[in-house]
Length: 468
Ligand code: SF4
Ligand code: SF4
Image 1 (cartoon, rainbow, N blue to C red):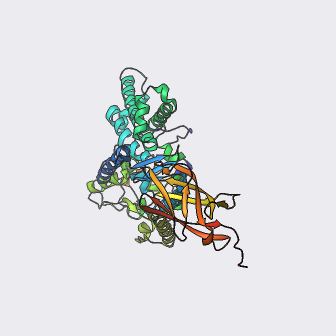
Image 2 (tube, rainbow, N blue to C red):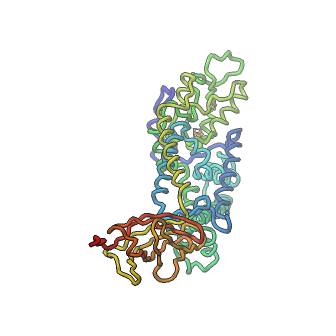
Image 3 (cartoon, rainbow, N blue to C red):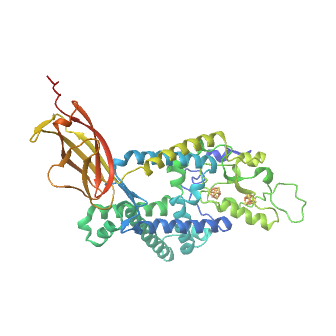
């Protein structure tokens, strides 16, 4: 998708790769302006959620945990385990459709405002660069100077701070996975007692340090699959960060006292100088653009200075720029919305009707009925139960549709919190109440006095002899 450019040589190379094929380090100018200020506020809110959420407790239990190692998830205080696989799969599919829909309509808004890579890179690590190493020109001079004196001091301080932050991020990531309680145990015990956890923290810290210190924008341009998919998700109606070439071209320097016959772009290069991925947005939408809004702010400043309306670079679609038409609802976005609404409806239904305790009762395979004293007949059943709550639950059973009794084999059945339990139970019916070989049974499952499930199964009995 492109707008104007007559010279399309920008398509032949990446802004981060030099003519010799080497990495070209980007030294963007520090951004400032209304979008950057708004992004700072959003970033701090995100940091509050990221670093604060693992500590949130409801009735003493974690509010959010994504324990992939034990296949246990706590979402908004509700426990999900392997038995909820279909719910998680449904949630994942809904999330993917949502991402597609969101991208079709709003482009890479997520990358610029929410993605942890961009938020940490632009709001934390790059600001540390400016703070310790100075302006982009000073940073370039420092990098090109020999390694001694001030350079060693500045680089050491910077990387120590980088590593401390990476260590904090790695710990936070682990807290989201295993919870703060287990994390504190790993941190406070000697490393030899939790070698796996300790190694995981160290590896994550080193990887984060490497990404933010060296790999940087390459994560978005070369690695991130979401970035690579933009080409198929965006269309002419998607809102992107776009240069209004109809207003800006033909571009040309502003000359004092001259009657300007050109477009509004004065070719000042500010939008390129602030770009953290090293592109010129005036060439049109490009894969490298992470929607960081720095070029909008930079250009708005210039427009104000030359007394022109802001928004030469702005959030808009190609259709919006070319024809002034802004359509959020297109056949494509309507299709995605429909699928998303259906998926969300199904997911909501399953979540709303999800019980705290899942129980299945199946007649024990290979077992027929047994004759018991007092003219009774018994069947043996296998019970499997999963407790999805934070409390232990006692279970009892009653027959609903026929008169008879239920006996749990062994001790009474207590379901441990967040665990799956198996048990055997006998159902006893009086021979006189058995009308056929196969009697349908309805079994009510109680936790204390609360009815949790009503299950259907069948009861095998002897064939009734006809009255002679
Ligand atoms: S083109 Fe603009 S929005 Fe895109 S990455 Fe560069 S500065 Fe950010
Ligand atoms: S900042 Fe605006 S005026 Fe300056 S080169 Fe970019 S688009 Fe043109």
